[in-house]
Image (cartoon, rainbow, N blue to C red; front, side, top):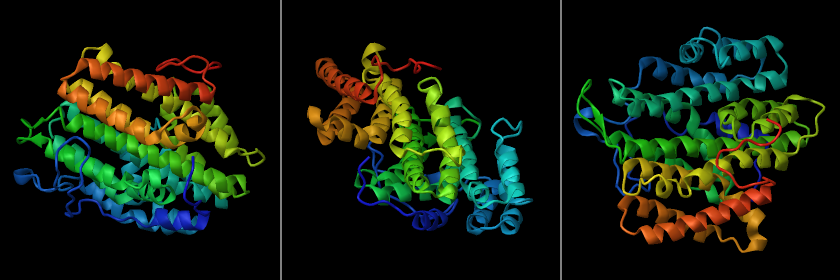
Length: 395
């Protein structure tokens, strides 16, 4: 991916320590999520965005800066063990399936610089998993969608926003990433109405906003993983560990699409003697993201969901995945005449057309263009046959 500059590990660490927002803050934004509606954090009787976040999340976010600032085993242990962050991570993974708490305790016991460097990224990955769970909950008809949505916002504004800030600083293509996610939180909150337990969601607002938040967070993580991998390739073992732990944020995106790529990436980043190839790590992630993007290039047409909320949600999801792979598409397909700006405009037109449902012929042409370029990109990545769902050989 082309970048305007490469962040050094010390600068990257400083940026990741500095959060621009705080959980439950009352600040407003008028940014737009590309869903066609101006937004504001004031949701009337429902209160402000973030108001319904749990005290447990608020306490964890208050404790977060101390964990980020800790550098040696005693300070990391003091900042984590018995803290609100540990309590929150344990509550977020009650059966220990992710193993975040156990991994962090093992890193503290290890005490080496690389192990300790991986503590905050591992915690971030665990908090991101909780965020994804919370912002999916309104579509699952939970009793209080406000509380679920605000819990996600608490995690975003308290611990995860710096990932997007780093990506936005590192590449002009990601300059709107922070605003994009923040505006989607606002838009989604505005799409919830009524009082629990009879609260309802607007299917034209909440599910698309969820997709923008989640897939844009994947973009931020993928960018930072590559930045760290470049430092690791230069011999920084702590950067390798940070990249390895942060990879947990997107690991499940490779499952079922490029399952063998998981072992490739984790093998490079976990073996101190391995030769780390950032370009190959990027390619392995891109294989999965390209396939996931392909699904939405024409899904609304194939499933008859033109003019329906479900079709619109999928189109928004595809466009957001495209933004993740766009810089690499431009780099790999430049000789074939790929125009990233024109392709982005085609995605915008497709999303708008799926929502309105007015011109099936135009949508058919747009979808054909989206599919053609996605398949060209898959070929450039070394994928044998263009697909939305097949796993890579060797899985």
